[in-house]
Length: 112
Image 1 (cartoon, rainbow, N blue to C red):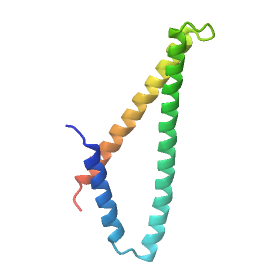
Image 2: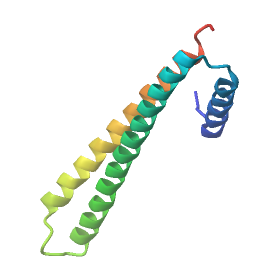
Image 3: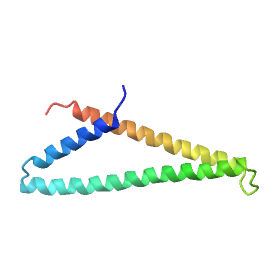
Image 4: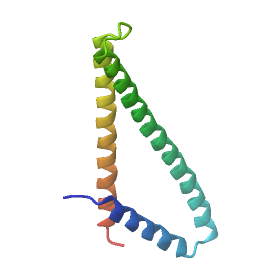
């Protein structure tokens, strides 16, 4: 089953606008503020994690290029270790994405 990013994003936006349209009691408003702060924390954490994975992949690319060009300051072992680190980081990111998509599907299938 293929997941279409644009359709998923559009559906999430529609749900967010529906949630904003609902009347909010004073006590619930405090809970929403707490959720929003944790949401921004998760967002920041996720962006930082993606940035780290990207940095690892760029560093690996530079080391790989240096080894291919015969740079004596970079060993093959360094390039291979960096390659494995970036590969593991990318796989972990893909697994997190898969879990988030599964959780989203599960939430969407819940009766309201």
